[in-house]
Length: 139
Length: 382
Image 1 (cartoon, each protein chain N blue to C red):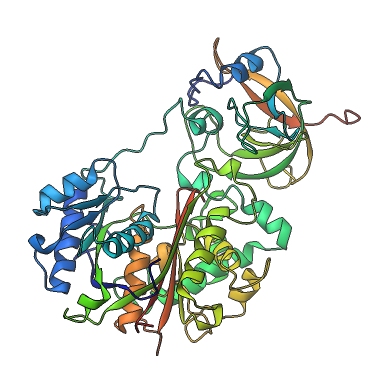
Image 2 (image 1 turned 90 degrees about the vertical axis):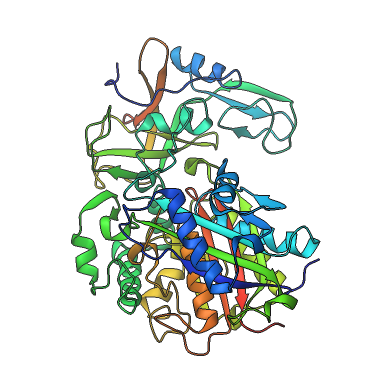
């Protein structure tokens, strides 16, 4: 269980499938049926074409570290320094997250390093997708 | 289609004091700046028939407080560049005949927080669901999110980022109203307190109280006003996303790439024509993105352009000549202050006046690369 104090997301009808998936340990993305391109955050139509012909699918969970900051000041639920990161998923979309299992330093957080998703419950209702360095040989 | 120079700025002023102004509330700062701008233009509240300020519910508060009866209002609120959009919308409204004399106001008690509007992220919003749980805490933790990717892509160093702050402090040193004017070195910046790696405190904007106001009318009427008219040659606007993590390209702002060129093309000016440039600098990386996205330099060339002194006093493209959000003032929505400096430069009254400046570009950002507005000014009607 994550330390208490983080801002808690409040799912909407359009995003509930994502949060239900996270609770089951699945990273769910959506795909545009016209172009085949994956997208995030969730919405019931394609941001590429405006088509409602879309589907939900489970992502591989593999990503690379795309960019980040390391915050130096205390925030409820976090112990500084902590990185606020953006990862690029293997399927293309990017998402904000935290990197766990890794020192929160510029030396340890190398851009483009391979990562994998790790689900951490915030409470009984919400589980957050976080990312950790990909185990050696896991690629 | 509106032509370059059909609309002009005939009144412009900041609040009497900027920096720490705990004796005025947020609406008081709006009013103080508005009264100063009306005095500058020789107008009374009853002469104003159009009003724009950042909503929600602010146009009616400001109108009632000042005693203005508008027949055109705009409460566009897309962050710190909202005022560039107000200028654009006001120019169109005057051109369309909806009103003749527009007042645009800004007031923000950013430091003292007297009567300030809270801006809580809603937990149901997409940012509330997909960014806030990961520990962002205000702009210093969000705006710099793309910077490391920009730095890796173009080989930009910590020293390059620090140089942006150093050069702007040089301009601020010429401006008695700047909050900080003492010279700083690259080492001073790099040794200053780390806020959110890679951003040190001297690479983050100030947090101040202040206000500003502009008055626009048609160019035909502008010649009857006491101040030298500053003509609006072209404008542009766009938005991208409220979520910095979802910007299309971490090395470039899509909103910048729409707003900037739209304004330049409408004005019919080339980069070589531009004598003076303002790029809203909430953080030290903003001028790098602005210079590249507006096409003043090629991709990856902005850091070297600044390092080589081109934007310094005496350089070929004077940039952020009031000292910017990093050293002059930053209430939270700095765009109004960038516009004020552009107007001063076009009038020839800036503390650090660029000699002979005739064309100025003022480029704003709203949110974390989430919106953009650009205004091209000139001091001669084409």
